[in-house]
Amino acid sequence: MPDNDPLFWPIARLTDAYAAGDLSPVEVARDAFDRIEAFDPLLHSYLSLSPTLAMEQAQHAERRYRETDTPQAPLLGVPLSIKDLFDVRGETTTLGSRAYGQDAAETDSTPVRLLRDAGSVFLGKSNTAEFGQSATTGNLLGPDCGNPWDPSRTSGGSSGGAAASVGAGLATAALGSDGGGSIRIPAALCGLFGIKPTFTGTPEHDSFHAMTRFVCTGPLTRSVDDARTVLGVLLERSFPRGPQRKMRIGWCASPLDRPVDPGVREVTAAAVALLPGLGHEVDEISLPIEGWADAFGPLVLADEWTYRRHLLEEARDQLTTYVRKGIEAGASVTEADVARALEIKQDVTRRVQSLFDTYDLVITPTTACVAFPIDERPTLIDGKKVDPLWGPFPFTAPFNVSGSPGASLPVGLVDGIPVGLQVVGGHDREDVILDLCEQLEAAVGFPGQQMVDRWSLPAHEGVH
Image (cartoon, rainbow, N blue to C red; front, side, top):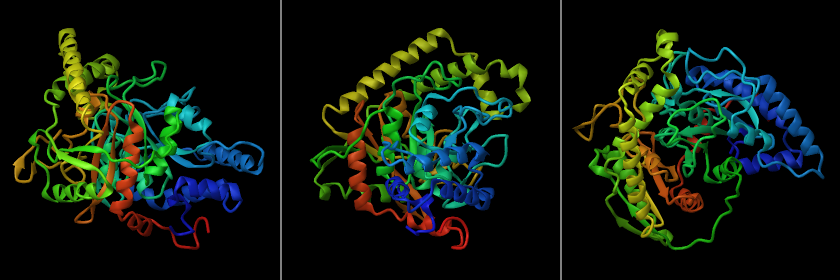
């Protein structure tokens, strides 16, 4: 990686340079804001910046590194973007909506507190779909978030700003959330690694609630190793590399026979074909995920009605069409509908979990197509009509319904645009996902250097 672009460095290299005194957290934070000023007008990855907070955190990190007898926090001085669904104490939270963002948060959301305690530097709040309710990142606060590989294309969503900020080197890593694919989808479309852990429930005391029976917090990073570090902070446990061992892997090229773009099919199949050479056994399988949408839809809409119906009267003209329609649809969801959806969710969970009696991991494409032009969701994939809501993104939400941990790993390009491979494990087996993804990451050799070249400042600017 170019020495004048520390924001593209792996976390371990960055913190080692800090500890050795070869690099300053303050200089890197300043460089981050220089890069954001130069490049974010093309991407719109941030909704707001927090330079005062970031410089205070960077200065604190610099002092800590000088105190050689003080144990260092795992993310000390590491610049992050924070998805604007999370509260950061002293900063505003818009939730991607014109209806919010007037008042500064009094406390940190739980994941933010953990990242703050780990020494992170918070650069700002990343762009998000309104209330996290879309798989692309558009809202009424400004332009849609663009993709670092082609800013005219979508970055995915709802953590699209998180992905774009990392992809273009406007943050080292990002905090995202995933209720139906909102980490894995933008990771796939932007050529990053993203992982959502096992569903355990959302903290009741946090201020924002949506997709409460599905949503997980997780990182978007440029490497699996970086994700080990950030995920370890978020889950308060470590993820050391395990010994290499033979795994049995179930591969499903098109779950429920959904159409998949031929280029995506070719690239993902080529990545899977590497697994036997890495010592693993691969079986082609079908996935028992029928009915997942009958659980997902009613429970998501019920949450929207519960938590946001007041906005239909108080701020109707400040809502996106997709959010307004979602809240209105939630009015018709009955208690009986919710009870039935919970029964289906339990059944899908049981069926998916039974796969891991036979397989260590299950693999699918992350998305059915690559990133498409902003506001132009495909209605045809591989010559077949698809629903514009789920057609491009049919493979992630079933594993939110089952509560399974899942990741997206970049495995190649189609016409210069990234393709992601989804890797899913049994409950609490994030370690197995990380180990396999790291092996495959090395074998694939994804061309991430292209983003370093594209988004580098001239040598006389920033840190050098």
